[in-house]
Length: 234
Image 1 (cartoon, rainbow, N blue to C red):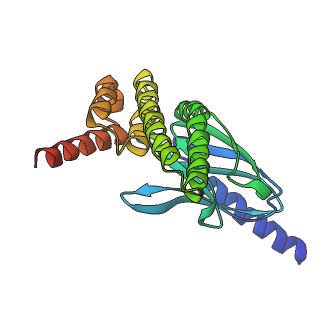
Image 2: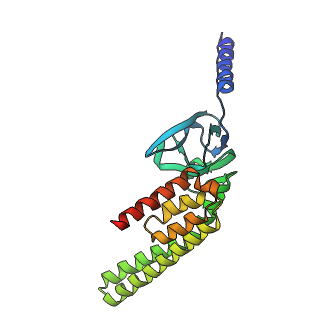
Image 3: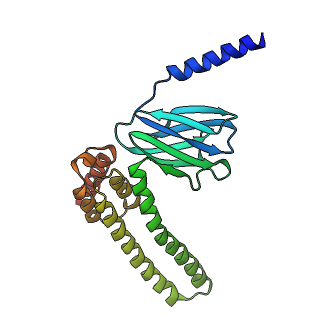
């Protein structure tokens, strides 16, 4: 009787897997140490995070998820739907993307391969990390200067910080411009330069290829620039 139940269960699982339609993007990989739980493939729909696909893992730490991708956009791989503490952000696009990570450090430093846009984001973050480290150093020095009530030091730090931020804006603009054939370029502009001079955003927008301009993030960047210009006129 137990054998019959087991065979029926196996048949149902096989049928379910075979019946499941795969999209043009496959997300596969391994979360080392994850023996029980659910992985969700999610993305933003307007301003709402929605689940596209999910898989329950019982005794196996490998997974396969999929979606039909129209335009490359940012996706989230979450564990049991937790999007605030444990998540992996990656640029989804057509093809096979492989993600490997460890459950103990889920989302901290995942290995993501197979996405050209993700490679661009990775390169940007690697260089941009230097600016973030400088920012943390400025915060530390500013705290110490204010504790010591050193007004001259505080003023100097403020000027140095502004110069550093201008340098970061220019670097980010040039980086996005150099990658105008990647959907990562308008994404970087929208997430890293939303408070920058509109001229920098225009520079990036004008460097985008026709294909990228017509993409989801390309259209969003154009809309954002148009809205900023309208506000400046008023």
